[in-house]
Length: 319
Image (cartoon, rainbow, N blue to C red; front, side, top):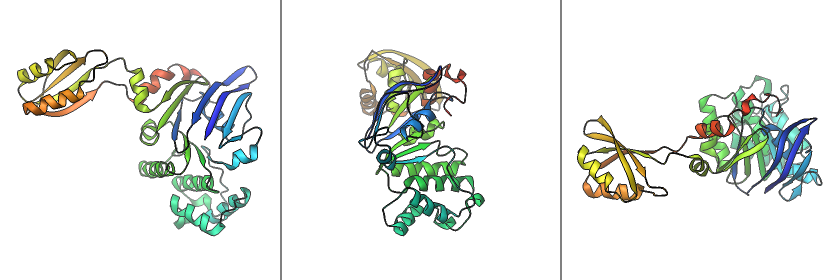
């Protein structure tokens, strides 16, 4: 659905985006992450045709953004960080204006009514945009991105400034949109990205430093394969059982955690996955596994590790 090949953007001597190459499949929700100044917004602006690239090629829905800009742009619904709203218009007037601006060919009243229902702005359709809350303005911005039913949605910080309830609502909406659209989502709210996105690309200093699912990236960056478990039973019997498991290199007792339950840290042999054998042996012995936690890095730890030092770049470089 989206193909980016050797994409670069320079401002004089400063290189904001360096030789990016990636693709986004149809129906995929891609999280595009990076610290301030990493080149996220510059990349998104080039994807939408708002900025021209210094070098490289972008194809959206089969259309070259440079050679066929109108067809490529018609395939994209874009929600920038600051939604392009006209505050003195009502919501209804604004959506009709955007419908005309995009030269939409779908049945006007039915199409706009479906979008308003989808993003839950039916109750404010007659109100002036300047009188709406931040949450409703974001919804109106998302509504304009959906006009024309574009196959690709590019959302830049769609939940910025929203309260927790509004964030959950927009997150749920984006997840549902992924069933019918290809979505690129940029956000600094890492739990939001982890909950919504199928795949992540992390950029730092204008370059891709990681690309994969959250689980794949965590596994690739993990340098600690230990497993911490809490098990109900006799401490010495639990220790003996764990040490006898195939694939276990060492076991360290961490002491009593609650009445009748003890914690242990298990170090498997390289490449060994002991989880299924652990569960089976404990069940056979009548012992209860209360908790199990791997020491793979969280998305936040992964982000900091991969982008460390990049935040020294000027915050406005990806404006």
